[in-house]
Length: 583
Image (tube, rainbow, N blue to C red):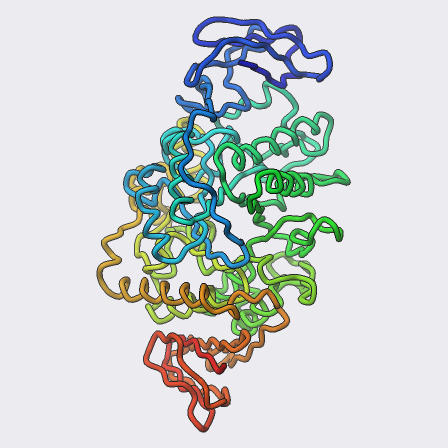
């Protein structure tokens, strides 16, 4: 078996330790900084590298870390798994995504336990399951954004074999799988990359310290490292798409950016395999060039999260106005209308939160709606609240139904956060399991200080290191069997079925979305082809002048609602939603 490692920091020698035996590696003449050697090995064999007689460290490209980030790597033979199912031929543009955290989706917190629940998601009408990061991190429980080994699978979740079983089962049910990957930083604990080479640079600084080296000396190999890890998920695990965490934090001044390079590589793998691979970015830039095709000067990412829609919807539903919600809270119905038709609320407008102008307009004539994802809740927007409270904590079932209608019939690709479909009452909090006591205490105190500045008492902020914080965040599926959770779940199924069967609801034409609203009465109506969606967020009934064709029909309603009569008025009950057709 070929063992190789990029270790330009090694001066004289690099030694492979395999199953307790040492094997010297040779310096490559043609590839600067690379050391290689051929040594017999089998699946599961433990190994690591020693640089200049130093400690044995895990392979930066380890496919498995059975003992965590500080332990030895294990050989993984990807050819031994017998795949049972081909990848389904799914189009992202007609998808409904479901964000899932393996560690809290089930009490067991494993990939195999999540696999056993995939039939529920297929029955709901989900098309793609979006897994939060799976790369190894210290301890057992965490969000996954402090992973340190971007080629491996967190062992407490089940490791590489369990991920293959998950993907295989998902494909057998007709579900695609999206994996959240983090290229903008690595975790603060268990990160051994700096020992091997210039993986980080002081040229740029990020909230996590020195930036990942995407443009300084040595960055060619660093970029190849992260590109290779991304493509390995697609090739070795048959993942269908990748969600790219916080691409605005990728410090990259090169003419050919890392995102463009990754987009081109993913498209090439898709052509090789005859599959529908794609990239979804999280970006705070409000820059439509992120999803503009490379051929016309964009970065070529296939879609991106749209936080502006979330913020507008959240303020309209809750009335909250703190932090970044302030810009949206001045006229929330108008903000919601703008994000339904023009995607970005901040498209060159002044942001009081940022104290500057922000964003760039989306060209609705050239940009299809499926370049963007719409959602009412995500791991970020729930978990970064002091107590991890979901919308279901404070909103009525009727307002939750309105949120679902706006997301699932809107022009963007809908995405749900796990448990949202039944209005789960369990919180989803920030939790960690750092094994370094000093780091654990720093995270604990930092969390308390952050929320104390916003008026929270320290004792009310959950301790992220306390095991009960994770345990309280696990979904309670028994709720689905009783109202109002059962009724809300039925509503979600109904809306997803409409999206799947009505072509107007997946029409990519942003210019065809027409909106009317009343800021004071708190109702909003938008049209997509022959379909009209109306929501009343107010506490009083609303009479909405829609006109009537005489062919109007109610397709779905949260509360009993009649189609407009001869007077053309839609009489919509308070805190309710209706979907109509006039075709």
